[in-house]
Length: 333
Length: 281
Image (cartoon, rainbow over all chains, first blue to last red):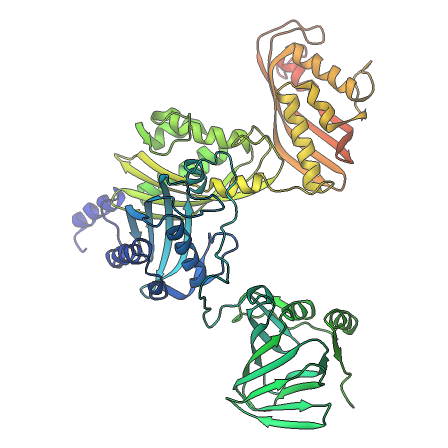
């Protein structure tokens, strides 16, 4: 680069767009995208989604009513493969610069399953799509994408129909799972953070399931459920569990299982010096509504909002508790 | 690192789309430009194809504003990702008459540059998202609904469908700036419209702003028309004239009940030659 003439030739080429400086990873990123598309979109290998997408993958144009993260991505792939079993995507163009890749593709397939509420028509369709992704440490960290859904709907013979929200499969017709940080909703009640893994809508109303994190010295105050049984499986921490009805205190640690029948007045506290974690099962389901009504609801479990300042709103808490048939007892002393 | 493809695209977005500066098109695009995804019915090549897109968007969304979110440049191509924000105040879009709604959407494109000009383009605007927003349910009585009523009323005046006034305007409408002798109610509004449309053909009011609060909606814009008939005693001049107008409406029970309408009659009369222009005697 020392020679001024050479430099000006280089500058000329950069200016003309023939050379793209500062993008050493471009080739690597392009081949990643090609493999990803072939494996996941053409071969329908959903397991590999977890390998290609970063753990904290963010989709900026997620189809409505699909779950966040890997699960939502799989649901979208699955939706296309169910509706168009022979679907194949061709990458028409791929451009890369620095950590980003843009590509344009065409999907082609036969409409043999229900798609966005339209029953199978047997029609051969093709539709375009454009996507931008950001790659971090060899994984897809972010995605922005636009698919010509209106054009596709038109091909399926629904002219002028607004594209409806994408239908996710019913939770009751396939095996499903959820990753470590995924949740239906995350709430914080007093100091306890609850990742709701299953709401009553996901379990035919039979149960709700949470993973709760409790800071040292914190816990759940003494209360009684009049309609639900409760079970805990302790994962981490040292705990005291209070059976107030029978005036008993249990001191328990990891791998212990606890059962609290309805009508028994109870509470618990993390008495260790580290955050404690437990799995909480409540049956019948529905107490996620209580947590959402009484606590703070937020999106990212790693970035909770600041705790509320000022005294707790006891009147509101009592109102919500009454709605869910829960009785709280004033702290002693 | 600056480069020509990105610079050209930036000028297209910031000057042509956002400001409507169509004169710059020959400096950005090649004469034999090709659009692989031209909207249905629009030209697919040449400067007309380029103009068609901003004309369509700016016609439906006079205040459209695009922001470039990302550009990826390689081998003479640039991939672009933009977001648009706009108010649906102008012409129908995707068959939907103006709604007065604020909308936002994203768009992506691939542009090829050769010899310092954009020569071809593949585009993918998120029309699904836009359509969903334009057809969303508007709560009756809400501020959005008031904006909707006023946008539709003004659209009815633009296309000259007087019968549709009754759909949006209360029969007992009060015009607080009534012309001398104007009949009361919605009939007077129709009279005033007839007076203007008899003198000016192709009348069109373009909103530049629509602001709503409480039961009031304020529109600011420009009216354009061709002076093809006598107006207040001034014989037809066949001049194209533009004058500004600010209109405040009150909306009660989903009907316009009151109007305070200020038109730049002084500017109009100057353009018609009835009042001398400053500097002329």
